[in-house]
Image (cartoon, rainbow, N blue to C red; front, top):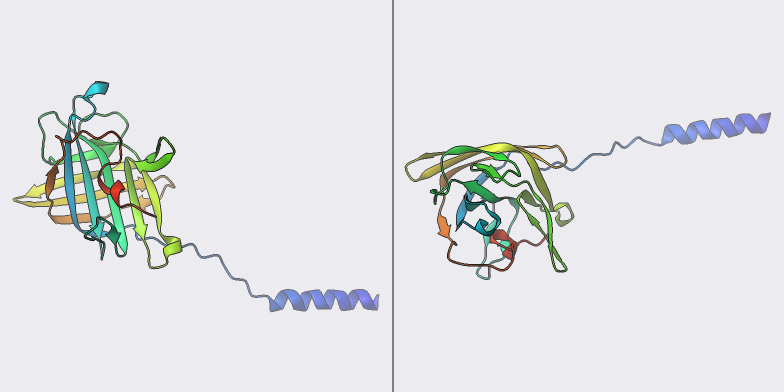
Length: 203
């Protein structure tokens, strides 16, 4: 009996000496301020599949992110890539509108994010956000599965306000204000979907 009481007392002391350490999830910036970006115009990229709407992509960058002389992305912050932005057949610039994440291929929609495979290479397509963190192990990519973003324009300045959700059901806000250069890629026929940011995206 005495041994049993000593054992119970020992266990009680052991448990009281252990401090409870709650698991703290890493917090990503869900409301970034994008400081620069650009739009790429691809024209009727999917005409062979019966899609007559023109195609754009929108790239927005925050904080200290920049592209070096060899086309690699440097620095820390958030990169929002909205690939397969469908606009009307007459549109060549990013129109003022509210765009919805959708697989419909209709004007003013954006394809949701997912992985695609070409040969042995797997890469992201559609809408997604990449986080480049000071702790490199926390750098990640999150697909965007639903939501909207709204584009307005005053003179040469664009305003883009996001109200999106990632595939893990996290809200993703964020906004951009400023000039948004447009690059005409419509005369370049590419054999793969590795457009835009794929040339320097490495996580």
